[in-house]
Image 1 (cartoon, rainbow, N blue to C red):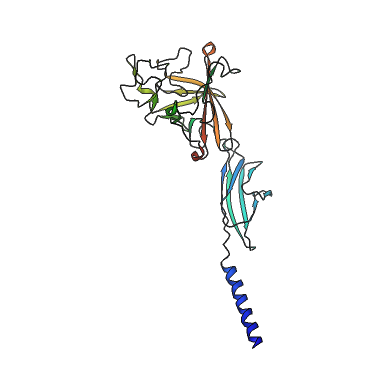
Image 2: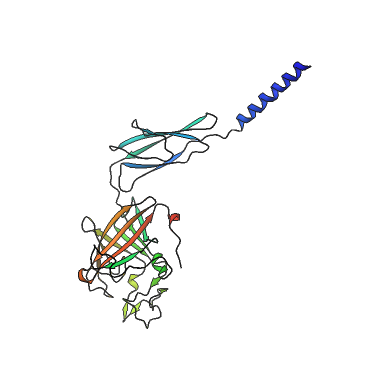
Length: 296
């Protein structure tokens, strides 16, 4: 009788162990990658594996990493077979392999690979005015995401690789004091840019609304928007210090770029000499869900 009980207990234990192994979550390897927008030999890898407690990367050139989401810079262009091996808690493993091609084509920070959307930066001052680049905010520290000019933060400026430029106003505009007078109902406020609201001194300013224009690079950091009514920064900032409601056929300015952890920062400058040095800060997020909330 005792031997029978021992045998039965042994069967129960074995059965439980087998059941535990059967219910162990399956480890699944998967990842994505993105070539850096500035350095076209740098690749950002994102691990999407499931139930893994340890990972191992093989970058296809003899180098490796055990980081969860590594960034790796290759030395030369070519095709690389990248392998991700992941390990589960019970010792099982899975492998995912992807081939990536680095062709050595530089990606324009303004347009990205195809198209890039820019909006006013919601952290800190979005616009400043000073006498020169060394004192960019001496005359005016600008405005902030505090609800006073919320419509300006909704505007989108889209640059495409085919050298087209699109402005999207989302049916809101701002009655800046440089254009609208205190007698106007829209003065220093956000408003719907209807046909009547966009006429000042018998001049139709509706060309400042949503539209598609062209752009070209004029120098290392110089850009020109071409097309009547094309603008960025403030619509009244033209190519000369005599800006206002005149509608030039082109607008020139300088830009510079800086890559942050979750977004790209574009600084737009209008240098009007004695009449002031304007600075505007725009951002393009890798994931627009990371954009701080708009205060209205």
